[in-house]
Image 1 (spheres, helix red, strand yellow):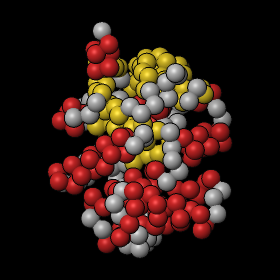
Image 2: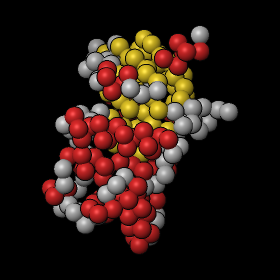
Image 3: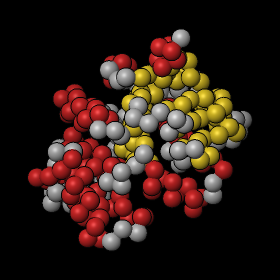
Image 4: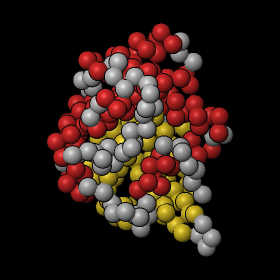
Length: 229
């Protein structure tokens, strides 16, 4: 079976003179995996996230999702890929402040042409899935950091994406809330969601099934490769 995600010798540089942020990365992730991409600040983790999530394009190499080389697609096609295949969870939550949890999550389906009533129905289901069925009418300022991150996860999941990308999902949370979010991600993975977590937290990475270490834009270790050797 083909990998869900494959990177082939992906390179990306920025600025003048150019600084290489992604230096020939090759990586494959199978359906149902739970992977931590870990490394210190400036190691290239965020660039890698942007390339995997089609928010940026490689200078060379290929990014392949479900057998499709997304690095060759136009902007409109990439927007379609993000809307249908990828869910994003960010450290800063990115919720609309004056909008209820229900409508924040429903907005995750705006670009799919789903009717409003259906969007809200699916949003309600997603919020119940993350344990927030009792908070659907609350606005972000009425919720804790952990609850806001759960709303963000529900929004990422509402379209049933093939891949969930979580960028430092516990970075703005206290330890107890962070542990609850990691437990939720484990439950989602157990139910079949493929998840990649970007983190600088070595303890968090070590607790996940697979760790890919990034340094200076290169993969320096991959626990999956070590196991297979």
